[in-house]
Image 1: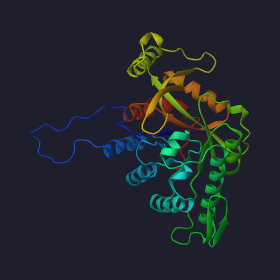
Image 2 (image 1 turned 45 degrees about the horizontal axis):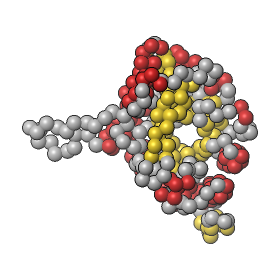
Image 3 (image 1 turned 90 degrees about the horizontal axis):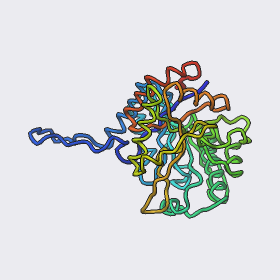
Image 4 (image 1 turned 180 degrees about the horizontal axis):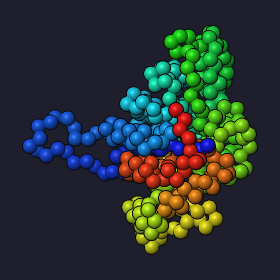
Length: 336
C-alpha cells in the first residue's frame, strides 16, 4: 500500500507570482495576501485533495520548517506533516521537546526528515562546520539522544557530540508517538544510519533503489511530477516550465527512454552562502495515466512513500488530488 504526500512551498510564493494589493478605494487594512496565507492554502489543499500528508522541506533560505509545520498542524484536522531539518539546528533534547509539544497539540501528526549531508558552504552559513563522516556520526548521536530522552525517564548519555545527565521526559511530554524518521543519501554512511534509525529512506528519482541494503526500512522517493489530460498538453507545459527558467525552447531535453524520467525540473541547489544557482533534476511528465504508470513502476521496485512535488503548489495539489490519485486508488492508503 502506497502513501502519497505533497511537498509544500517554504520559500518564495510557491510559483504563483506576486499577488496584487487591494485597490486604493478598499479600506481593509489587512494585507491582500501574505506568505502565511499561501502556506495555509497549500496545506488546506493537501487535506482537501486527499493526500496522506504534506512535506515541509528544509530550505536554508526559506521559512523555518518546524514553525511552518506547527502552523499547518494547528490549521488542519487530519494532515500529517513531515518537517525537514538538519541535526545542527538544535540540540537533540530541544528538538525532541519541541516535537513532543507538537505531538501533544496535533494528536501525533508530526514526522521528521533529517537532512544530514548539506552542501558544506550552506552548512557553514547555518553555523555548522562539521564535514564528511562526522555529520553522520553526529546524526547517529542526535537520533539516539532524541529517542532516549523521549522514552526513558532519568536518561543519561555520554557521547562525542552530546551529553545528557539524568534527563528524559515526564508527563505531559512523555507518552506520545516518536516522529517517524525519514533519512536519505546513497553513501555507505547514509545507509548505515538509515539501517539503525530510519523508518523511511527517501531516494532521488534516479537512484539505484535495488542496490540499497536496507531490509526492514520502508522506501520513499521525492518525485517532481507534471501531469495533464494528454501527452501533448503535458509536454507543452514542460516546455513552458523549461523556458521560464531561462532555457531556450530548442534545448528541451527528451525523457530518458529507459526510466521515463525527464531531467528538466528546476531545483535550487545551494552553492554557498549568499547565492544559489538553479540546476535541473528528474521527474515524471505526461498524461495522468502515464505518470500513474511511472509511479506504479516505483511501487513494483519496493517504494511505498511518495513525496510528490508540482508547481504552482496550490493548483497542482488540487489537480493531482482530483485526477492522479484516483488512478492509484488500489495502491494508496491514508495514514492518519
